[in-house]
Length: 331
Image (cartoon, rainbow, N blue to C red; front, side, top):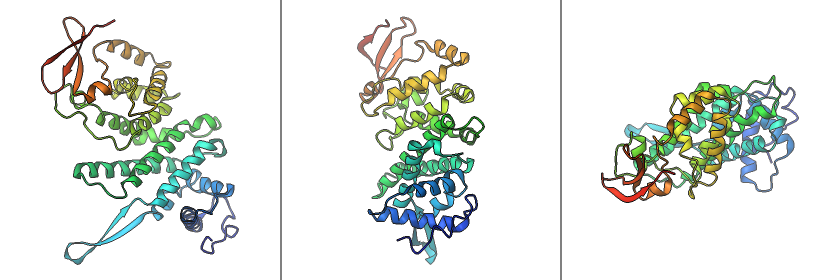
């Protein structure tokens, strides 16, 4: 079933997989995806965890599962274009299942694995950006969406893995912080802000700065930030220094388009303020200087501002200076 490759001839030393294990995993993942009768045995999870999550082979396995298209370029020169594949989605799904269901079975999560998943997230995000700019909808665009979803699940689990590990184990989230994960997540939230908030309260006719890639994207972003914040003062401080506090506070509202967003955001704010006086002072200073903008108000083309004289919140037409007749009095 697995192209004649024997497991017993490969696994002689847990930490010396080499090229044979990479080839074996690629064939195994391919067959598991395409043959519904194949069952993921426990030793498959064990091998995958040792090779990809504890070891250094995730990138090589992931790239080996990519789809390659050869197109004839200008001048008769062949151009190679790589795109995401079903097998890559299946690999990320399997790894996310492992991390979600059995995080305690891993002795460690390698820095290589954490940074590689972050790179996959960045690449998938760039594909989404390129497609939105060109208004081109690929018939396989759902693959990119799944890559994003499972990358978020894995990163969320990596940020929470320290809870399940021994005190002496190295925290892989530290590598993610140094590599810019927090900046990327805050950028995602800023791009989803209504344009008049994202551009310093300037009034624009467009409602949002960027189209959300899929329903639940915003929730996924905040959920990773939430686990990233838990027990990490440096993340708390970096969010404050990068003006990210208001981004989380604005998500503490009910949004029918983003299930569980309010719950993740509320827990994030709790972790953000826990034992951090600087962040507590910063939130206290905000008061009514920055009114709450609910998604419902934004979708109606309106915005909320605070009148400097009366200190009352007013609903304002986002496309003009016309003040609506509705005024929300502060309680």
